[in-house]
Image (cartoon, rainbow, N blue to C red; front, top):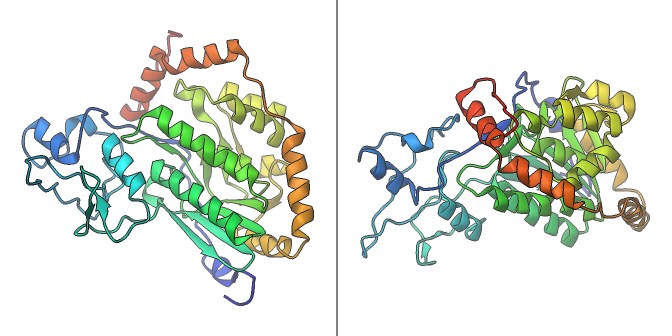
Length: 362
């Protein structure tokens, strides 16, 4: 890397491959399991995958070691090394121990130094004025989990501290981001952190560019929508399949989609679960350029040479021009009803069982 520009040569010679995957990623796990050790013991005492955690995902090739026992007889909680099972406790401790390769946190909050470092869910390449941030969970098609959100929030803070002028957000092949991974975490906790990350991107003083290659669905579409500019490969798709899962998108995101994607497109995405190709979105201005990651990085380098205070002022004015959407009581009631409905449960079960959902309106 030379000077204050990101070297784009590797992005041009090692472009992400196209993906035919179009299904959203939406993982669930049993909330009753305290640890992987306990979960296995609850089933039959064997080392087989527990039935209560039989969700549609592929375990990492790196096998998890069984939890060790503490002196007081309680199993030591280890951060999950694969993208598979995580209990709520594991996720909480994972958050506390994020980024600490020197050890993890055990049940009593003490560091354990005999554990392997957690693999980062996000990779970032910094230069003097720009950054390339890559969602790096290819086995999950870069579905965002709690760890990903925590890392993105920290990167946002680092970008402000480093006074970055342009930031490119992308995903490792085969997707930009195919949804949300709620494995072992309560939905309200996940969505609270997701909301912080989404709003955090809009508050950055630098210009943010989404480089989309492959599916950008659900949470992926939300991340694309909060970026200032979007560059996408022609066959990339963007959509919000919430209606297929019995879920309701929050009011702030709906407001964002109507602004960034247009009212007609937002209506079709939210009411008909329609997905759009990048070519279709480019035709209406929702995607600003058709291109690869290298094109997005090159554009970021160009933007980094512009007047940063002018850009920061313009961005603040653009964001504040829409104001904060007011959440009507009836809207909140409708959302809460949908989230706790039988249809929401049916949507999750149908996804896990890979069958069409049977919604009843209850």
